[in-house]
Image (cartoon, rainbow, N blue to C red; front, side, top):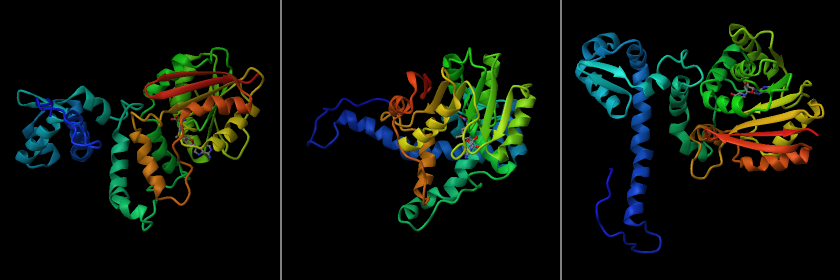
Length: 354
Ligand SMILES: C[S@@+](CC[C@H](N)C(=O)[O-])C[C@H]1O[C@@H](n2cnc3c(N)ncnc32)[C@H](O)[C@@H]1O
């Protein structure tokens, strides 16, 4: 569906779509039903068959691939042709290979640690099986959401599961943070809910004087320690077990909330901003890095996958809030000099304690 046939764009009544609009709407509806189905389930099957990993190491023939994946060659060929149609593989002579796009997002997650979809594929497949297929019953109140891995995480394994998801899509907004964060004169940064430490590590690499105190849950601390030690930053990044909702924050020259505040209502955000204010000296800075969830032209499907889960919870803080509220909230708490930088569908607000 790439061209519009030359027919009159007439409206039959006030609510009908014009022929031109109808064409655009058809594409959107096709994307919702056909594209969503083909894209996700082909990716899931290709991952289960091990095709991304096999093809990441070298181009391979159909016969080779069929042997290695224990599949039926004529079936596998049709499957590869489908993958080719949706931009995951190409064929050169009789060898199949991954496209650069598929290699980046679906092969070798260790190599693409901060920009990979691999951990999300199994996570979403589990949600489909255990929850999304019963969503109507969730709305009817007959089914509740139960998380596959306990949340909040309690054990190292629980935290590893969530931190692996969190660290998988930080590459682009970390660039925004490094380029725009005013941290050149900051000695100690408090990274509230700092994940596994990849963002803190990138900041330490960009700002050589910086030390980071990283707040996380007890079950995540060893993961952070091991990660920052592997990056040679054990002496500059110190993880501490503090409940970011209930306890005061340790003192520092700057406080970072990276992807912490976006789902919380204004009242909850204000409570956390006040904790940051109390931890800072005069001249101290606050940084809020959030993904944008409120752009009417770009629904945030990453956030929506979580928001749908919140439908099935008795209580959830998840809601839709416009990030434009932050300047007012920051000023109410006492911060001044609020600035905004935007990029990659993320925002970075910074402000100063007078
Ligand atoms: C959405 S992730 C954000 C991680 C990281 N800042 C980023 O932008 O990728 C939330 C982080 O907060 C941590 N966390 C959750 N509840 C917490 C609590 N009550 N106190 C401290 N940390 C918490 C999680 O373990 C996780 O590392």
